[in-house]
Length: 409
Image (cartoon, rainbow, N blue to C red; front, side, top):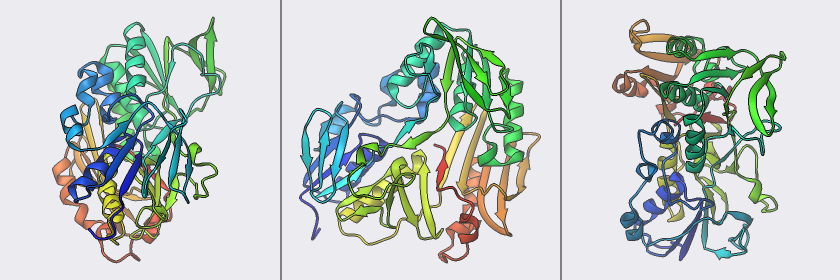
């Protein structure tokens, strides 16, 4: 382990941050290891927050990624409830909100995302975002006392939250600018099936119209105002308008910030500074483009790549993106990328039975595969994707339509 750093500081006690720490130990790193977290909680998993934790099927403790005994065996110092507020990349030091100064030979940025909000929602009772465990518990408490909920946002989180709230027996309306849930991610065929599924289960869809703001009385929300002027009545509003990389604390660091912390193909932002997970935007050599992935699988896979890079490996990180979502009885798994102008064809199963595999092609090149309640069959087809090819030239045409991030779980 020649050239290994004496100490590593991971900024973010997230799934990506914990996975980085575990990968370092697994690869033989025996130096000082510190994990700094903004939240007071030990590392937990986020995908269950919009489903099992929100519905009450899981106790919050079940979302923990590791028991305390496993974390203790890791031999890392966990500094929790003290968010990072500044980074000096040259000195490799991080200052926290409490004034603590932490230094290390290598720093890993794993600060994730911050949810976007609507104007006027701060301080208004009954309006929620859903990013943290505390968010999920506060939203659940409000839902248990409510009868009508409006979910603002027609992406993955909004659709999952709407499905969970409907399963809890609430009157649910899903609002957003797209013609169908996840239309921008999955295309017309699959998003149309999702819209039908939600409507069949009793979710009211008010899609195709942007949200203008909130209506309230005496400090509590009473509805969501569409740009048409119509107000959708609500006891509780969930704002699920996506999230932005949590990079504000990096202002003045000298690092390049552009839809995330920009890194090279080794996930390195500067000498001794790396990024991992939702906040990282790195050069994917297979795509020939910068890419940022907001999903759980990437958090683990990229953590292993970053740990290897810290310990001296010199290999590009070139994953085939993978993410999934569960809504009602639909389990949707995606491998690769799904360009908005892709040609979509069902290659296995049947959309009527809602059990199928769809292949996404752009200019005749397969770039993505989606399985609806057929996870094994979808996984077996990932070898057909251009992204799986060792030749970087082939998938670049598909990458031209990427916005720089892929969202999922």
